[in-house]
Image (cartoon, rainbow, N blue to C red; front, side, top):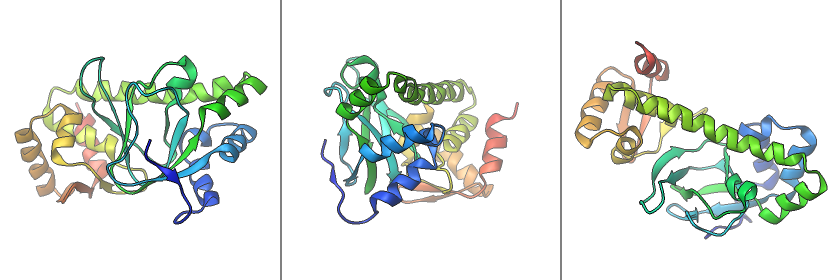
Length: 232
């Protein structure tokens, strides 16, 4: 892990407010939410850093505050592939706490990014004091399974253009119209060839749905993309 405790930039109370009002923690009881935030450490990662890798020793959970991080994974003995981006309030790393086994996914940072980290030792202490919190932490896993179900559904789209539209919809950050993915990465997530990605994105741009840029895309009409992706 190459991150460091953050001393400049966003304040801890600002970070707490962001994750408390988005994603997993928003759905949790107030006393549990406050304890997680009280014991979490705000950390900063530079673009390109890896927070943890598949096979790393068990560790705690990380919640996205600001920036961009991606989850990569693969079956054993295969190189990790881009699975999903993350939104503010997204947490991951819960499998090590639940199973006591090494990391099963890889978390990488794509731009200067701020994460909250709840160490495994603190999670263990919380569970020792009140075993019911295991259920709260398990909700992260359930959210991950929901994402996996959507990914499977998207990949079952036979039409590559609809598959790419669905992937763009999934990758679009909440409250933001910018998707920080290269065309190659989008193709990897959507199981589409580079030629298919180039052609389809060109069509989407002509329709006024997206604007292509360096290292990413701007979503101009998300509702149109969704209608196209999921229409019969």
